[in-house]
Length: 544
Image (cartoon, rainbow, N blue to C red; front, top):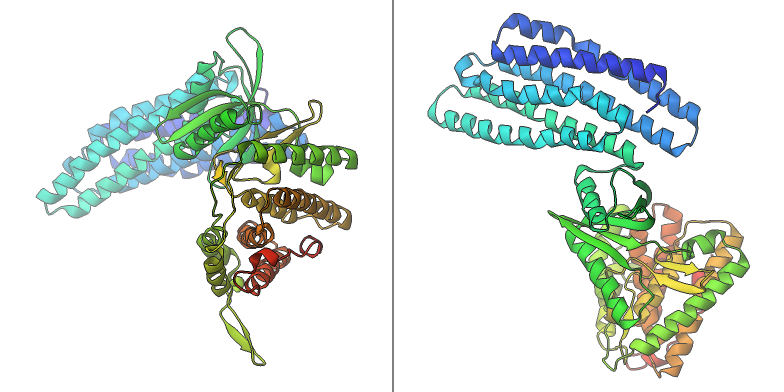
């Protein structure tokens, strides 16, 4: 790795300085003497100054280098390494200060620290080689020191707490516990250094656990984790990370895929969702290349899909490309609904979904939490009261049939491959048999919530949303679904209101919330039993 001279030079000095400090720290625990402690404390500013120089040089390099991705990742990684080396220096000094507070040295059990500190020093000695050679195996070895320090911490913690029960010298043992904590935290710093080096090697920020799941899925296709490139695609709100991946398989052939990892339960649902689409509508979902579990996390390696998401098309595609994509989407969705239709009535439960999400909405937008009030003799219901009343009405109606739905039908989960003239779906963990209005309402509002203000783009957004509404309404008439409009009003109200928890812009969120309220009031104004006569107002909902 070629680094700016100032980064290279000061990083070398920083590593040498920390090695000396760790040597003195280990020497102190071999033979606790105040002069050794004083020597260590006296060097308080050395590591900090060198770390600061490295970080300033990294910042200068990032500014000079512009937006070159690989260079930026290298310098960001070096910055992280420097910060954590400085942290280790501070942890060592604090450990000595707490150790000196133990008036009865036998209670400290100082000799127990020598072995772990020797391991820490050995790990620090590997940092420079791991950086220069981009050696992921060595980076993993550095990070695994945390596990050894964790085991050391647990053993000595049990010893100290047992001693606390058998002695009055609790102050000494409290200092001993604080000493233990500072040394054990060096493992966290080493793992952060390990993750920084792995991130430099892979080309994307990577957590320690994520690296192991990545290696597992690559091994299952014969891939080589030493020849891999990751580029971030998304970070979901549930914590899952999605990246594009390029590597080589066992035969040396280039493999392009999507790597998705996160909570094991959600990733498993995604896998089940993809498999279910293979059975109900083959060719729509991407192929699963590999699935691996690692503790509480799991990972999928999924076929890379060619094409553009609908979000990209709406925001930046030509009118011709967008029109072609809409035509393909409407045809595909109609076909899915017809092929998967079963004569089982479906309850959407839009108001129950909304009720469960309003706490998150109010946390971001507390002013939306309105109570019932009276203005000039006119009673105005609180928003939660409207939701409760609408839930009662919704329970009395249902879709006369069920279809297989996407379940999270946002613009960025729909891909159009123009060359193949084909629609593909991604993020399928919520797929199930359900009221098709669920997907229609989510798709329409995912258009509106795009935070783009220019009139031309807002007009395109409205056109795409209303195009979906028109297609679905025609399908409803063909299938003799009389309450389609009424259920769509409730679904849109749910999506408008609940989506504000993702919209920080107060004005845009307010417009969405007002639309939700309007729809609920309109739906509730319909006499019971007359829901089939309700007609959703066209146009005004999606035009600002």
